Image (cartoon, rainbow, N blue to C red; front, side, top):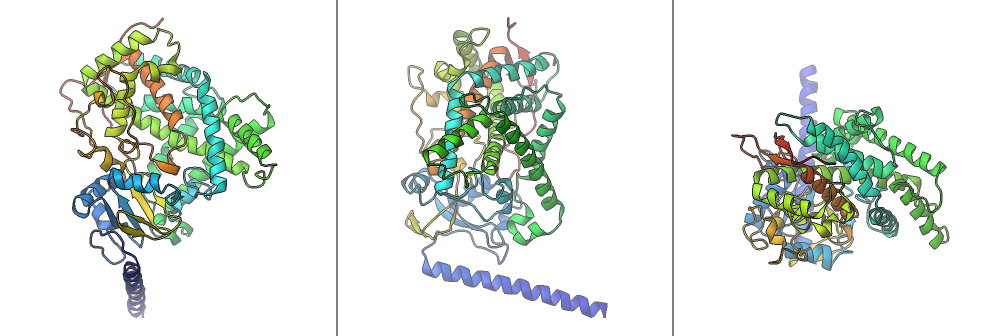
Length: 508
């Protein structure tokens, strides 16, 4: 009886799978008959092109290889019916994200992990396009600009880096800088967001850092529930871990917002949380209070979580790549040292103006972001109505992935794109050239361009200037640099590598 039951169970499962496969094939055929969709690689039933990621799971790498065969716009099935369109060229991406910015302003609402991280799409990164999102983004950008305009970010960067610099000065052996960069960035973000001054070993700071590390590990790839949605209801480890970590992070942010609301004073913003609360009050006043019911504390909490997720990740990974490229190019490092020494005093006065005062260092940062963009494939955009791109039809609800890596490494856009050359961003007099945002887009483009771009770049530049004013980096003798991004689905992450850190001079 058990054998018969097993056979019947297997036949039932097989019937379901066959039925699903036939349904997907029929739907795909009907859609292609109605629309002129972009071409793409052959697809397997149910699995689609999932096996294309078996040997190389990096989305940017697989998409770049596919583009050589299928052109600058093509269709990919990530598996289990998750069909997306990849945009590979600067012209195609510009046509979509800039020329049709509102049509492509929708966001991906198919993947469960995005819904979870955004608290049900109440943030800025993952929320869909609309009036509420526009108001929330406006509120956040006002808070960011106000914060950057003063000297608070400069003070926080100095304080946070000073503590880490003392730890680095005690090191005598080659070391992996990752943990020190993370400590600096975490502390800047914590102080900037909550106004809290943490010590490196503060229990709350350590807890928060560990939670962020857990999130980095868990969300660098699709979760099973992203591809098979009903699994979000199944108590498997990935689902349970994701729910637990996000609840803990959101609960932590909620406590901070509650404390800030109880001590909030008009015109006296202590940090970004205060700035967001005050900006919301201003928006409510402008709209006769009509936003009070929809722009809730949950939206503030999720916006703060965006600052952590995007701010910490972008700054940390960009600085790690910067250290590796500068260590491998001593002539670049020497130019940076000369520029920093000629502009900044020992006490780093005027650090917040370093972008305008340090054009070569800014060019180095731009080149690092071109070579190794933290988001090598931008977050998916969703069409909010039927559209045409590159001569093809894109129905309403189509998910579109812009391949930033492909644009940044295309010889049609850049001379010798695989060569690290900061000078490409400078004119003959050593001044910064205007950025061509059509071919340089590490923060994406159009309506969904990163709201925190200015904040992230200011933070990174300050830390860069302080580090290279004080230290010199190099690879240990005989150690070959590794610039190949590790196998992460979404991100462009560097492999752990040790560097020699030398103190340049005594800081008074």
